[in-house]
Amino acid sequence: MKKKDDNGRKMTINDVAEQLGVSVSTVSRAISGKGRIGSATRKKVLEFIEEHDYYPNSSAKSLAQARTNNIALLIPEVKTLVAQPFFICVSAV
Image (cartoon, rainbow, N blue to C red; front, side, top):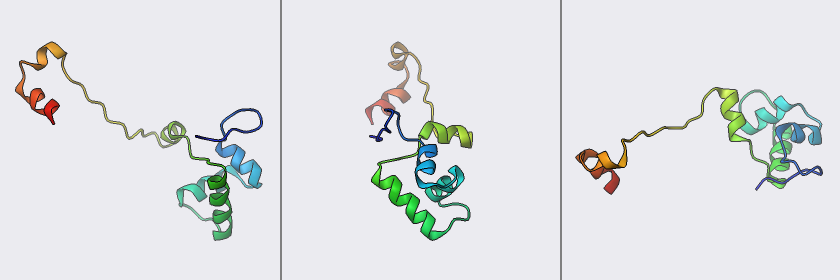
């Protein structure tokens, strides 16, 4: 569970950046491992987020990347499943 700050809010990437005195993009680069960032800064950020149980918000990440990595599964009504052998086999697995 994410630790909360003094105001009872969940810690955000902005809070991490403010606490460490670095930019939000620096924290983002440290977490993702992409982009140019010094090894000492990366280590400092990663240690801080581990100590404070911070983890990126998956919804925010999905919005930023315009990708959710979710899959939807649509099946017919339950009463029609019996008439279709495919769904009987799939549900048994």
